[in-house]
Length: 350
Ligand SMILES: C[S@@+](CC[C@H](N)C(=O)[O-])C[C@H]1O[C@@H](n2cnc3c(N)ncnc32)[C@H](O)[C@@H]1O
Ligand code: SF4
Image (tube, rainbow, N blue to C red; front, side, top):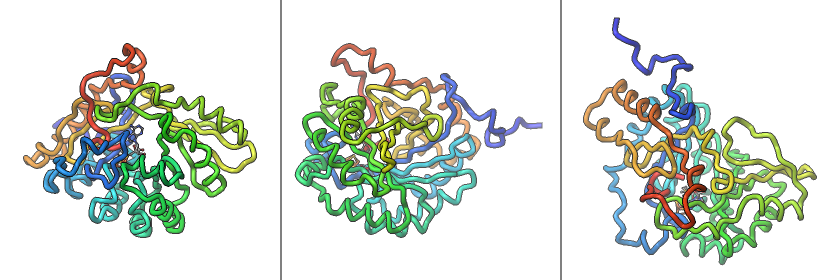
């Protein structure tokens, strides 16, 4: 009798990496382009008008993304997040949401967006089954916002997008706010003031050394601990139990019962030990870490006629060999020392 294919494996035999971490989440970059040029992600000196982005034929089609997602789900993935670049720049992305939510075993489909195009798409995204949305918003100061979007964004559009998402029933909406010392850290409390009690959950992200082009330095990182103290002086807070193992944000609730705030501390409190995330780039390269230096091309074998079983084996073997724990290793690097070239975030998906 032939051996069972990997797709038939029972849950407990699904691949765990060399550190015992199962495959549980898949982040898919559906678009390498973006309509912003946030200096911490796609600085405009590098991503200028002559920059060569992918051609549309180089990007995975919706059929290809759906097929690969199905195979990842067979190996244990339950949560899928669409990201980029800016995912709402990808034509008809709501159709893809519909295709992914229809896959048996997918429990949660989410999307991360800069929000500028959200007002146009919120109703359709909800109608096609999107479960959750995260909007990135670093400040509510219009001038700082313009600087932090590379001069390309109007905060009013993002606020309209958030309202439209609420009206479409996409609540609770999470806001991702990257905090950079000397740039927007003094506006963090204003962001809370604006959204506290509205059902929108603000999450502060420590500025990360993703990619190689954002001139990252440790002294521009505001440790979450410092923000917790600053916020707590104004609105007393207490920590809240995580919703599930491996939740990326540490949650704090306001003592007065008016909502909560989250902190994502990849720099000062790395969470590699619980990281169960796989990443798929817009052109179909599979990465096992946000800070990866290389990945495994799934597009070439797929377009070359590989069967589901062959692709599944490739994904599974890659996961079985995974030993990434970059954020934990970072702290052991000498001052200012950077590892070799990493993949850019716009490409791999945040
Ligand atoms: C790469 S973006 C892609 C999705 C969409 N364009 C957006 O901005 O929400 C995903 C998330 O990564 C975050 N991000 C990008 N560069 C970062 C950095 N250097 N440090 C921390 N977070 C970063 C963004 O703020 C955003 O919340
Ligand atoms: S963080 Fe998002 S909006 Fe900003 S440049 Fe990167 S991909 Fe674009």
